[in-house]
Length: 310
Image (cartoon, rainbow, N blue to C red; front, side):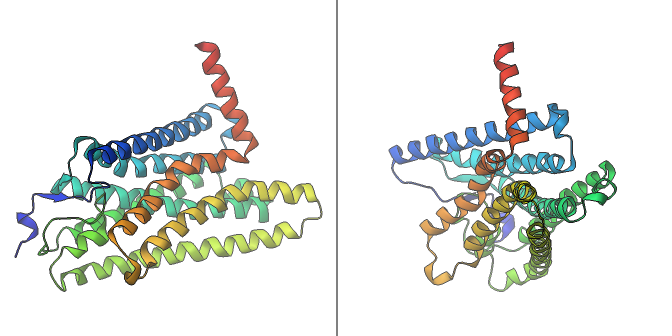
């Protein structure tokens, strides 16, 4: 029997066995990571530098972009290093840190997406109260609540998970340290300690999900009552990017965590975890800039200024 104090490192799951495929995966991960860094950094810079984007909606988008950068930077760099150096090891402390930061960024992002749904609800359903309900102080408090709730949730899960005795070795069946995979290594019945934290997280997720659904129900009801087609189009254009991001976020997470064990396999779990941990942070900048003319204009001005200065 092996307990957690005797485990000094974990072995992550490799994407490929042959050296050529490992280098191919490294190049693919590097391309995705650089694209995510570029897209998210451009949005951060555009929102920070353009005064026209200093509104609650873009303030929350700024925070979402920071969380996306943190989320993808928690998983991909270590996966790239392992693929490049043909190594599977991650230290015990490194694994705990990866769990902490991933849950922190991931949980904070879902809370922030819920706040962004409230922002769209107030903007469309109660436009006359938008300034009073979403002032600068209220926005800062809501963003701080999203980050704070994500951090508390992450600390709770990390402390519970890494206090469990480990009896099933140290091979994590995933390309990054993920709580379900760590729990598989724990001793029989020891994972029941995690039940309290799981109940808290599920309650939080269900609460956020219900709030988003109700908010968009009210939004669609209000938009369909608008007499002007141009007004409906403008309202939908501000909601669709957020709705697309929420759908991508929830669909990938649901596939990852609600997939029946009978169809589960190491390769399928690897692909699904890649979809929910890497794809949303990389694709979100494209989704938000695709139909957002203000953001497109700010990005164009930013790139034009950069080219002229060069």
